[in-house]
Length: 212
Image 1 (tube, rainbow, N blue to C red):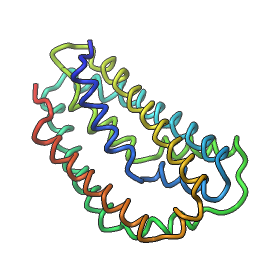
Image 2: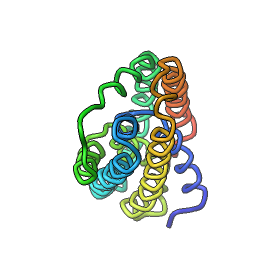
Image 3: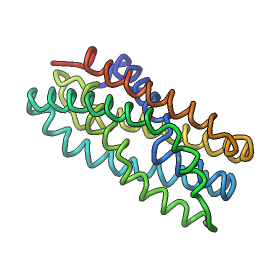
């Protein structure tokens, strides 16, 4: 149903979009810097669960529409690509704001509370909606049928990548708190590189996305 090429291509696109600091990553890093490793990992788990909720809703809703309409399929792919380019430009322009966002993390947070907050962040994270509703359909093979099932399978790959990425951010941030949080320039470089990567992903989706 899902080919190895689909899996590899979507996994690469997901990796580019997921590892770049966005609401979920900043949330996890903020918890790591303010409260330590355990709270950050709980936040990452909650965030992954929230993304899974979005993925299932999109697959059962958008997937059915995409399966029935080639026009809608193309429109979603192109709209997603344009939005990715816009998102990348905004991320590059606002690369200096990462330090301020991270510095705002304060106050005690228990493990259970962090997991619940992570769930909310995951459900409301615009990057999750972009990934599953705009980017994912471009890697679906409409000719193979079972589009919602394909989307669920591919979504699960993205969720695993997301959980792994968030966990790595949590571990690294909690280990090097003072070094990572004390340099706005380092955070700015991360944000700038991330913005350029998102722009590249959007352009690639326009040029190589499936049209069948």
